[in-house]
Length: 459
Image (cartoon, rainbow, N blue to C red; front, side, top):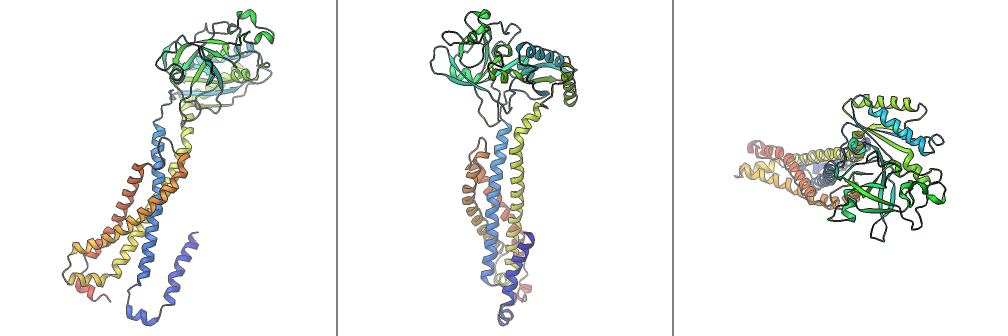
């Protein structure tokens, strides 16, 4: 493209020069035809317009990324390592083995050097998997939808999710305990605006229930028929705590209503209900540590081998890396478009400078005559600056129209900002107008410094 561009833009003036009558060349000296000035001016205006489109796009992405950096995660990712295990089918298809493995892993991870707190969940914040189920608040008939999360150990403390009200889960909240849940602030505000969620009850219609959820308690479990919730189809749980909203899937998503269950209270025979296996067998262990992250990751791998040497690790990474991966694509877009826009802005400045410098050179005799007749240097300088403003403002105007059309396509890449954000448009327009004026300062100074005596002998 560079070779073709050089050939094409060199060929046009070469052809014009060879076809120009010799008499005209001798009589006009070094003066250039007005259509040449027009062509150069048009190219400079086009450069400014293109630079404005790219700069506006880059400005929108920069402001969008700044908004993304300010998003409240709802958890503290610093010094947290997350490890995902997908428990092997056949080895962990019953509750006893799965519960035993989960407890052994929590104990092993809690004994690691520097380990402050350890937790486990079926779906970590900003993960790819989000499990949504329906529930109905007591006193309502319409079902609602929320993200269902199973947790164990000291999960909320390990992830830095703040407890806003009530209590966290305890060892008493097991399979034989009373059905309890912790809800997010978003759910509390959605279902009970202006009220506390503590003590409220929810009916969970399609999540597997432990025996204590069912009428009759533990004696009601056993066969397939007794696994149902009972004659009225109700599985009731009581809200015992409220926690801060943790972003579940993407940074750009609004906080979703979430319901946290103790792990043992979302489990029923996995072969009977595939959903319960997904909830119980996909485990994300989280360790908040004061030790080195890389050393902690190695120690966590060793802990898995000690508990079950045949269990593979699906992934292991720090939560800071998880958050960074969510910001990676917006950051890449911002950098690449920013680089292109900077190059375009430099080209626009160079193009504007070239047009003005060439114009001053061609008008040296005219400028000399003006100054010989009494024109002041400041007036000559204003003449060149006016030419600069005409080129710059024309290019900015055309570029603004193009940017309005182009940035609408970017709307799906933006977060927290409109594609027609006036601040960005005004700032980029002012920046390019200033750049164009800067490019015109040297030619303007040269024009005002012309010696009339020399200029009159220019040709």
